[in-house]
Amino acid sequence: MHAAQETLPFACSQPDKALQLHQRLHALTAHHAAACAPYARMLKALHPAWRRAATLEALPWLPVGLFKRMRLASVAADDIVRELRSSGTTGSTPSTVLLDRATATAQSRALASIVMDFIGRERLPMLVIDQNDLLSNRNALGARAAAVLGFSTFGRQHAYALRPDMSLDLTLIEDFLARHAGQPVLLFGFTAVVWQHLLDALTQAGRTLKFAPGSRLIHGGGWKRLAERQISKAQFKARIGELLGIHAVHDYYGMAEQVGSIFMECEHGRLHVPAYAEAIVRNPLTLRPLPLGESGVIQVLSELPASYPGHSLLTEDVGAILGEDDCPCGRLGRSLCVEGRLPRAELRGCSDTRVA
Image (spheres, rainbow, N blue to C red):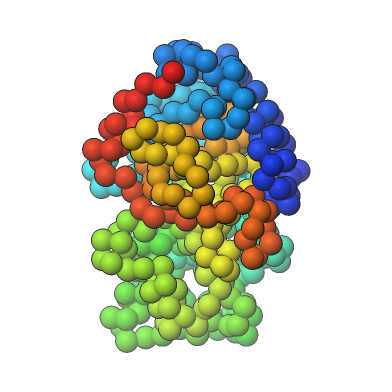
């Protein structure tokens, strides 16, 4: 069920991918319907004709917020080896995702295939822009910890830039730079954490850091906080260049409910959908699929979730499909942009909609 492990992430054209992915996701829907009774009941109520779904767009989906309310599993309790929890917004209930060993392994391998397509196979010294005690409980990981754990496999000689109280440890960073002088390094962190606890802290201290040419930053999540401060992606990248000397910056779009199926940003500013996943944009009121270039609510599909029915989810994010098989970077498949979050009133409408 995890063919993604042997699939090059961006080598399949959109028509071929759509056909193959539809077959796999249709079979995965049947698997979850047979193994997860609550999911089977939801299918019967919301998508009674799902077995006749002839396209990806016709496959059934669940609202992503459902995982804040229910613990859904398609495997026995004894087979669950890890719980992932979304970061959530302040005061909100986090989502809970239940993983068996096979699903966790498939997610890790898929993530590796995507990230290495962008940064290469060489493991670079890695500076994590987060707390040095973040991974203290690996059996129940929050979204930030799960992301750090997943991305840490692409680096070596890891160092953590923040103390447990989120303050910047400049002495540690300077030691890291001295130990790897002249070598490109990899930085990773959540967008808002990088901005507030690294860039803002450097500005307040009147400091800059000089990373070697070829160094890269991968960051994701947290754009809502930056948008509230009217900080654009262009401003974020410019400040990274000014304060760190890093010009290779890759944003990514992903969520705890579909770990491994991340959409990475290429040098042309497009987020790319890998071969074993898909993005569909729907009208937030009618839920009909929208054509290229039109903004709506994003649906994400992935063949990776076998231990829980999270393979087709209607998110709470707004974006647009930018193109198919046409990005100047040469990667095949769909590319998209993410523009923000839906207003809460619209989210209630999506969650409550009955689809025949």
